[in-house]
Each structure stands twice: as structure tokens, then as C-alpha cells.
Image 1 (cartoon, rainbow, N blue to C red):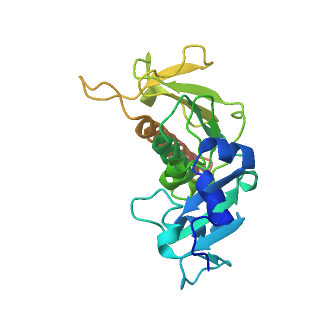
Image 2 (cartoon, rainbow, N blue to C red):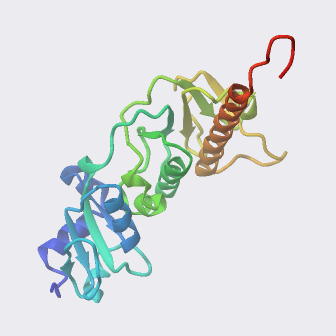
Length: 253
């Protein structure tokens, strides 16, 4: 039982709240039983689990007094479990033909939410470009609701149709053919997508007059949903066509 905040294990866990410590160590935190369960379900093992006494967990845990463990986490309502993971154990490869590429998305909540949307509407991969919040930061991990353990983080998007989401884009998103491989590029909410980023088209999401723009996470989610609908509709049409009985000679069915 750990009862002192000066314990070396707790000191290491507290340091992982900072991006520099995560970068140097290759470790990050996940707070709460749900995130631990999500990691285990995805086959991502924890390096260490710190938990209040009396919990029935699926993995061994080091017990820590509740008041002491509360000082490790970042939640307003302290979690009963804090688990440490290796970034190297996260998925990095996929054959998916759908991707999100983020540029300058600094809000960790947006980064985590986009991973969650990609998990729900994919499968797909994520490219976290320069100037973005760390997807393994505490707030991003929480916002991902476990998607950090299932959505591959890759260095570059696969070859695909590159669609930049831009509130001032010349083309309506609904006019695009999204049935093939596609990468959606998303920029910062104020600055937008950098002008020097290579895209095939800059597309806008139709919205009411007088509205400035959508939140980055919302825009990405809508684009992912539009892709799912387009692909589902295309598959249904092909299925319906192939299921028709061939006509018999003479025009009979």
C-alpha cells in the first residue's frame, strides 16, 4: 500500500502529466477503469496500474490510498485507477483507406474527440501533424474514450483523395465522391488549414448563413459520417444490382 505522495512511482506518474516527460519516457497516463478496460480489450497492456484498495481489476495493481492517488490524476473528480502505458504499444499500422490528417489542432479535447469519431465511423488512421496537441496527453486520452488504443497513429496518410476541410472552400462536401480512399485534412479553428498543405480539393460543409465555422472535431466527424453514408449507399446499390435475376431470352423474367 502506497501512502506517501513522495513515493517514486507516484512521482513518475505525476511527471507524465507533462508533454516533455511523456516524450522522453515514451509513457503516458490513462485515468479511470473504463480506459483501462478499453486498453485491455484492444490488447494494449499497461506498464503499471495504480488503484485505490478493494477494486476487482483484470490485471494486477499497486494499491494507493485514495487521497494520495487523487494527487496523481488530472480529473476534478479523482479516478480510482491510473494506468501507465507505452506509446510504442499503440497501433501504428492499418490497411484502412480512410484517414484524418491534423494540422495545428492545439485543443487536446478536439484531438481526442476526432480519434473517437474515427473509431466509430472508420476504420481509419490518424496523422497528428506539427503544432497539434499530444494525443497521449491526459485530456486527449479522456476525450478519445479509449480510441487512442484502437486508432492507428501513422506518420503519413495512405495514398488517397486529399480533401481539405475549409469553411471558405469552393466545393460543397456533398458534391464529392467519397467512395474511394480519402484523407480529410483539418486545421486549427482560428487559422484554418495552412495554405501550403497539399490537397486535391478544399471542401466546405454547408451550414446556415451567418455562422462562422464548425468546431474542428465536429467538422471532422461530419466528414467521416458523410463518407460512411456514401460508401454504404454505394455498396447497397451494387448489392441490389448484383442480386437481380438475369433476364431470360425473349424478355421474360
